[in-house]
Amino acid sequence: MGTPTATERRELAFAGVARQAELVQAGAVTPRELVETALERISELDPKLNAFRTVLAEQALLEADRAAARAGGGDDLPLLGVPIAVKDDTPLGGESRVRGSHAHGPPEPEDAAFVARLRAAGAIVVGITRTPELAAWPFTETLHGGITRNPWDPQRTPGGSSGGSGAAVAAALVPAATASDGAGSIRIPGACCGLFALKSTRGLIATAPYETLFGGLSVYGFLTRAVGDAALLYEVASGKPFVAAAQRDPPRLRIALSQKIPLGSTARLNAEWRRAAEATAELLASLGHEIVEREPAIGPVGLNVVARYLDGVAQEAAGVCHPERLERRTRRLARLGRLVRPAAARARRNEAKDAARVNAIFDDVDIVLGPTLARAPLEIGRYEGRSASYTLNGVLRWVPFNGLWNHLGNPAVAVPAGFDAERLPLSVQLVGRPDSDATLFSLAHQLEAARPWADTRPPIS
Image (cartoon, one colour):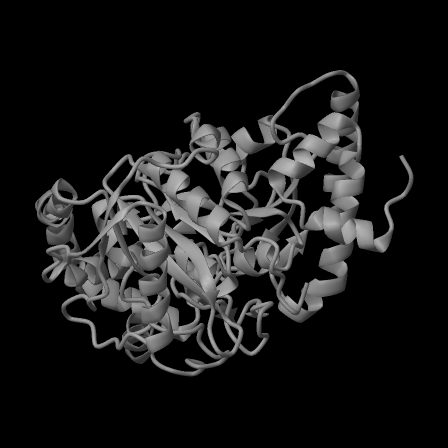
């Protein structure tokens, strides 16, 4: 094997998780070459993006050499030698869980359970990606870490709270990154950055060492460019056969097109985002699926989502080592959370009732389709210096479609759906009944084959 050229390294970076693993197994590249490629791209491009809080170069190269020895010894691990990044709200042994805050504590004693599974499968952690303070916002801008930017347009946010992961994967600094989703925090960066982004059924991926995340709203997951890459990672993390699901088309499905803004939100759906959902419905109809117009009986569930989200922020703020170091806006958001704690408790008690009412739509349809966001990614600095309540009201007008499914626990996936007039990514959200993650993988695979997106690359890449 010769040393890859700059062009070959760039193509290698965009090859994706599954292909990189195949190349290592075939002896076509070494784990060190994969890790060095990721580190070189981080060094070159991350000054423009600020996706990484820290880079673990020395450790990653050591692990790459160990992975090479394992490959030479015949180990057949599904992720052997593949570099990944870990979001900064996820425990990583020996590293602090900073969560975009000056209030963080000492290093974590061990990896999160699902990260340990990735490492056992051969993955190599090359760094930790940025998140807004306490993973509280759908944009990634903090006093601690500065501004994380979108590789499609550096004057736009990559979303949040998994914004660093979204930017890093979209620019192919790494082929995949971990993420978490408490009210859209996987799907929002996926939509902003043109990525495949699944919030899985609650409970699919272990949350250990924590019993629950963000008051029970959040789940761990991944951001990738391609459906098959995500399927491989979710299969490793959960033990479910998602790779096979992502290699076959689904049966004929009955799909509800839903574009109504949830009750209580003052959001207005942008025409380009509306058209993206309608065009996807037309494409799915051409692929043999039945499209109907139906709206789930959401009712005032949005109020329950907001109460639980605010209570989650309050719980996160109560657990930091140095609460006096939190940003003022975060402290005030946590105060709101403490004030609504009785409402959050009622919301948790009402979860089963809400789920029964909203999920009744799945007695009639298999999938609910709609926009992922109400409009394009926010401009950088849109809420700089603004109060907690002003910022909260503002972002809820941008992301009204996501948090409901965290409250109910359903799987929901953001799938790329072309570009707007400014060449910013568009995205649609597909939602299934609980435990229908495999169906979502199959449907997304079918969409990806009909309307490929993974080879389209952002300007900063």
